[in-house]
Image 1 (spheres, rainbow, N blue to C red):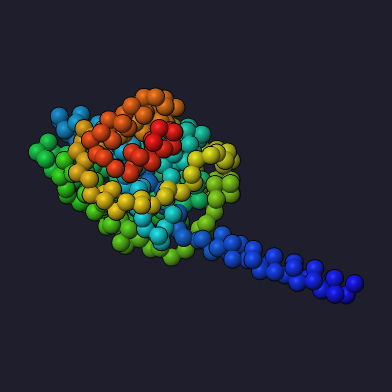
Image 2: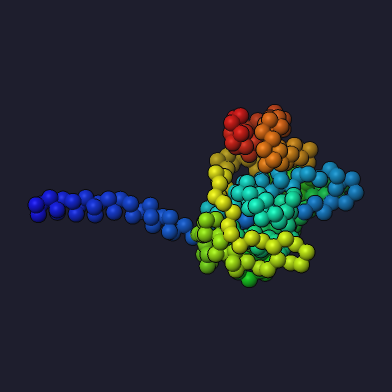
Length: 276
């Protein structure tokens, strides 16, 4: 009997030991969470129309690049849209600073990235990005980058590097919270501004979307020379996918894929739609 109990005890101890690394890994993932919002189109004249409708694509591709930084976790675009829709805070994914802070806290984020872009109609593109610290509500590390309007991805990649470079990546209170824990964050969220809908104090329901964006497995992804028309096609595909218009989204993604063979962001979304 003693020997049998000893074996059982040893078996339990061994099982606990095998389970320990996974538990510790889950607890240790306290990397800062970063949420990226759509950038504002500040272009003027004809160039404004040229770049109107590219916001979803720019957001998605900036998220793709930032997800390559192993020191942070970037909220997946689809998951962010789900929260915005559930909270009824934005119709087009663009938000003001106060709303960005409220949504960031609902997502358990430590930082939010917002910004804008401006095309001068002469082939030049200016990107501005800023990071909002969720703990202090202060804007930190504002960045401005000048690029070319026919090579948006290079400009986004450079902005991503600048935004990441001075970000304090030390773990902060609340790091590692899942959306399931966001109800507590919502209680401490900034109060709604006058005239804007109040954020709910309950977290959005869990869904089947990825919580965090995955890094690209193809280094060449951000080296594609993507111009405004191609970016607009990609953005429209994302918008249609968000609306649940699967056939139209696939059609638009296929058009981009025909121009840029092996472009991973398109392949990833076609796979989500079951059309890879």
